[in-house]
Length: 166
Length: 166
DNA sequence: GCTGAAATCGCCTAACG
DNA sequence: CGTTAGGCGATTTCAGC
Image (cartoon, rainbow over all chains, first blue to last red; front, side):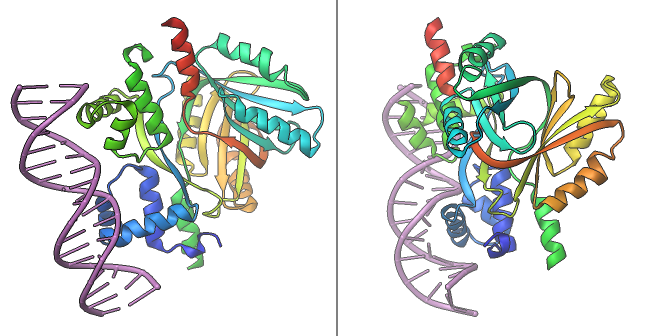
């Protein structure tokens, strides 16, 4: 069910579209070594099978005035499934929260937040996040500087892995 | 210098392309309410000005066999600038590390990692990350489940903000 | 069954007003 | 910014392996 159903051409297509999602189909076909029609059919199949979830322009937050990035570690008071789900649903409705992952270990969730400035974030932190029902502890860490931010998946790791098996 | 140089049409273009990076220019023009040629000119300008850093297919890691996501908190022994930079450069060369952000507070860096399985990650953790020069402490947290993972920027926050000023 | 070739259709993208 | 217009890509159809 995993990448086994994908042949090397499919994986190349995914890698190319991950690197440049606006590449024309003919250029993509040229790069993966087949002609345009089957290439397009493969892309559609990959989309429908869920390998490709969508295409997004990578917009620079700072250019748009989002100067602040923060990671927030959140502990809940109750970890019952209904309470976990309720918190996740809250996160989905907070636009400043871009990512929310449930973790193992001491803390229950890690949130990646983005905000125009510190005061906007701190208002969100005190009025919304900390004040939300069932939220026990919140520890925040400001991003001082970004060192790496690669979207997607490391295809070289995948190929190395499949190379071993093949 | 920030979003001030962007008019409402530019912001709509960015929002639309963030939501669907493969939208045709004609469709984009229709949605923002202008004709295709000026729309394309705006897109090119936004790309060259750095508002758009690129376009990427959003590939599902799990479908490709990347079952494990981990956040790693890393403390260094020396925080001299040269040592910080050296660690960042190491992160850029580790394909399993998709993001690396320098933080304030107790820990120096947070890393978002992805791996095919736990043993691959643990091998990376012990042989590479923990073993790397100047690395003092590493605390890892497995992602149990993802609750939200929105790429990009919350344009509704931006519009609300600009609405106040305008 | 999947690939490649041909043909149609629609889009991209210049030039001009 | 809109319109026009020519060239190219996208996408369906059909034939071949």
